[in-house]
Image 1 (cartoon, one colour):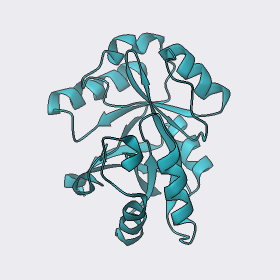
Image 2 (cartoon, rainbow, N blue to C red):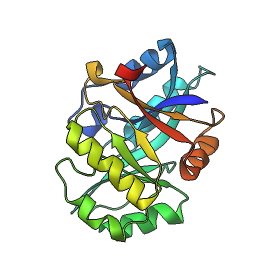
Image 3 (cartoon, rainbow, N blue to C red):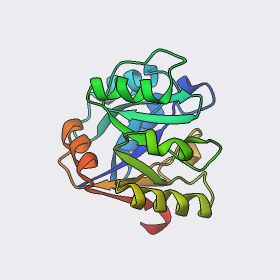
Image 4 (cartoon, helix red, strand yellow):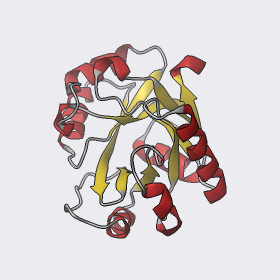
Length: 198
């Protein structure tokens, strides 16, 4: 099993203040969270920097990711290292991810977007059921949506500032490799956790 924060932003998101070096240092020194998915807004630059800095450490896992902006809200794609073109519809973003073997996660479906209303048309792999920036009610609604869609629930801190990191994470029953983790998410071998539950 590995514990992973599946939703972290870097300075390359534009609205975040976390440097790639800080992420690697904090991940290396953390007692039990040993993986992170870098999910910057519409760019993979932060992921590339974090991955390069993390190469010298054997016991931490960096998962490629991107939080793609659509007209209906955000979609997180994990496991791809290519950015979709801007202005794509949700359906086109899903097709883009599927063609490249990416894992599609719907982040904070009830916080500031209409994406929950479009879920019936989205072929997702998981739903973020705990996001520390969402309200208790919004997270509970996300849990209910995941159950209704029979999709795994995951969690991530959605950190934009250093003091927000690791507030939420996902326990994944998998070996610490990108492919193993992505397959485990698809298979529902996940448990969403709040840092307060640790």
